[in-house]
Length: 548
Ligand code: GLU
Image 1 (tube, protein in one colour):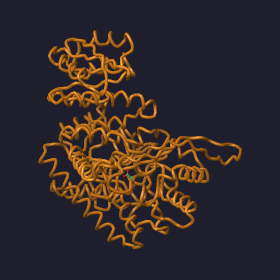
Image 2 (cartoon, helix red, strand yellow):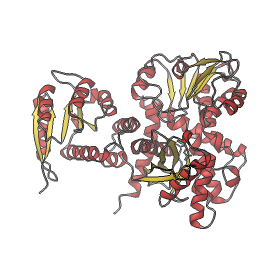
Image 3 (cartoon, helix red, strand yellow):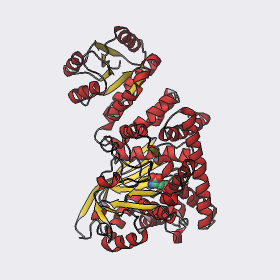
Image 4 (tube, helix red, strand yellow):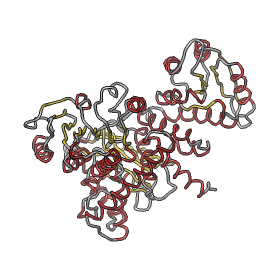
């Protein structure tokens, strides 16, 4: 006999509370003990007595309302999982609660005994499994976005639960030798494969000091939706190592890259899972990964990674592809608005591979790029920066800061500079409720993954600022990765012109799909892009069927 689970239901409507109690007690596969509290204070007191496994919480209570109810409860009872009970009208509130750490939400009119029981069991499992590794604001954002899309399309619960977490994740502890021979450092590495339904999995490898399993999982989920939106025959994956690559010498970086590859070698392969560059990694790291894999196989296997140097079978145009893709998508949006881009201005946050190429291609179209930044800070010139000159300065100085003829700005000030197009191409979590009201742009093209929070999305929508979401705007990278893989597996070589023509065409089609869907469904572009991705994955899952 399994042990009963203790559930506290905080719900002021006695009819609803009774219904939930009845549903839980009627479930056969699990046993529940249910306590009902009619207000928040009574509910908190009940949980503080101890032994409670989960709380079902209505956000509208006599002594507390809205997100506040959740936050007050959370601060008192962490880490007991909380599932929100919401009405159809308060869905937005419920999704904010998920973003703030609630496990899930259930729409009251749609609850069945089975649905309720699963939500409860899964939420408890999730909190137990999560520990610190899963604690990531990015994962909360990815979950919140997915749950919203799932709700809008009324995704059946079987699929919803299957897609919330990755099919395979590997955590590795790896060691590498510092240049000082006796010193060995041990760090954590990850490879996460979210959906294995539609072909090999695909996604970058990130070297960054903030990486954890939750963050890599969020990024792998986004890769799934991105590949599906673009109609690429891949599921999503991501990898990473929690390390600051800026603190490593080139030799240390090489040893780390090779050891990481060796640790995850059983997971990757041209037909299994194909890594690529992401934050903190580049062509050179891909070359080392390819070499390490090939040494183990005994022959050269260039197709195990994409984003390689061209001389090793990399594709022409891959290095520039993410930035180029951002600009192709901006061109489509500009066409829809009747804009002549040569009369427009832009600001780019980030001057890494994505930010630099986005700035370069924008300025080649005649756009005045007024400001760019990197971790050290930003530079501003009202009439537009000379991007090539700036790139030469960065090569010498290691930062954009100090570029002659430009004023210095902070990263925060940069986001608030008046412009037509803002391209966040650095880190996640940059455009938030704190600064979304201050932005002076008309269009945002997300070069980075997850740069905008849900609250910021709503503020931007109210202010009439359109967001070209990451799933679409930065999909150029993985799309040319796909071209690289196709060229590799067929032993073909395409010209840069061919690559860019195909890239533009795929992005144009995806842009159209997203815009049409947003118009038809009355949603923003992010939700439309997500729904397009989620629906395609679900269709594939259903048609393959569940094994066994
Ligand atoms: N890391 C890139 C992204 O986030 C590209 C992944 C790939 O090329 O596989 O989309």
